[in-house]
Image (cartoon, rainbow, N blue to C red):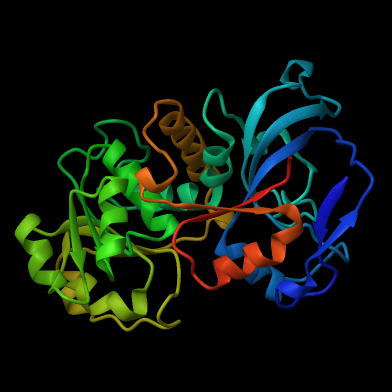
Length: 336
């Protein structure tokens, strides 16, 4: 089989297309024929700096495909099932940028009739967004239609992959969704994703515009650039509100005023999907699967998430596109 492998950390040039023996699923594992592998910022960050305990790594946490074989202890009736994969390469050498991969059965989810493109886009972005929408004291523990009714949510950076996922999930759960963007083109994408109100932070006063929509503040902020936006976020929290920080765009340190955050009992929650509490991650997987099954989340230009497809042989270019912050979702096609 063909697989992308790197044996040392570095820039995209370390990614090599190689022939590998078809892996056999071990106990509790399944063999998946990959149709699409999703590429996320975590993939290029891992490629540049994470250690390689096995001496090699196939990148790709997310993917979608068909189960071809199962290991001991796994139900045979899963063979032939269309699935999406989450967290394939976390502390494991077998990622999804290959024609086949092996993954623990608990990390595959039935895809049903949804597209493989959607399946490969779900893992890291949507699980991260789910945590950001459920981690606050006054936010629900799970998402479903109606779960966020009477809630206002601010998504900082609504045209990014996690921002798009947060808008879609919050809209599916009936929140009032406000998104910030940096251009008119990105505003169209955020609106297509389901944002009720979109603010161009380069041209508008974010605090003033949000207060027009949510005079009492927002219950949750999904934050991509905490260092840049902290002063704004402090002014916009509803009593008991939470800022969920999932990235360090714009700086790696945050300065916060104590008193203005004490009075509303505000919370700052930092989010990394790999180390989420087990129960929270399990709930996220279930809720994201339900949203996909119900048509509550989509991909493509019409959903505010343009797709960029690359063949397996162009994995380095796919990684470079994500590293260059291309707008939309990058997918690697592992099948003809």
